[in-house]
Length: 263
Image 1 (cartoon, rainbow, N blue to C red):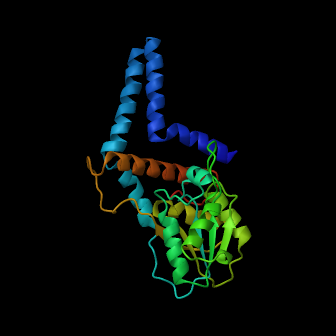
Image 2 (cartoon, helix red, strand yellow; image 1 turned 90 degrees about the vertical axis):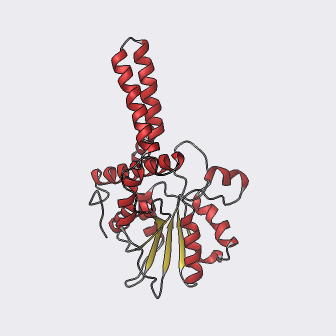
Image 3 (cartoon, rainbow, N blue to C red; image 1 turned 30 degrees about the vertical axis):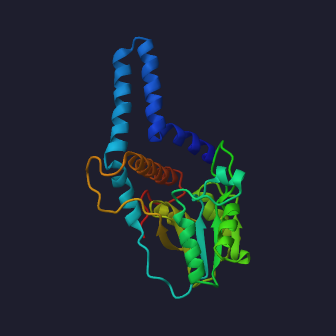
């Protein structure tokens, strides 16, 4: 139920959809002669889009998330690498059979590089299909083709293809592997997603070392207008809003101990 409700809620509140809903509501109220309320809704929708598209609002949301967990020095030995799903175009790969990457594809590139650096380490690919309605190939299934193409042997891969969100990533990965005391396991995911991921792996009692990738900000953005191209600004704002909502929701439901988990 949590998964379904979270998907429905996010569909409604992500910036573009939220603005469209407000505008449609405004049109409907205008037709009912509630003109002041209609104008207020349309103006709010327009202002919200301006903030998300033309300002550094998104970067200011994402920067503290990305800076929360720094990448440590390279360990001498690594027992395993856990890479969280979210970097593939599942719908395209299901049809075309390739390994098309999306903007989060750095997760897999970095995991492959780490696999070459630590030839004895196991690689866990954790990620099923997180879509509620759209059909797509599970990230874990696609990753096999990519890693084999990059020279990583199939027998090193551990596939976790059931999880639909980060909570299930941590839970199902812990069921698949049993880390020994003193083992070092790296957790590879997008930097903005690392606070929530680390908190959930801690709750699952799976000690991991953060290895953030896929940075979306320089960390130096302040308050400003037209600091990035509109498409990237909107995407960054969408990511930031989603991640903060996720942190709050997971904290309210008792899945993590803090709204902003610390190192």
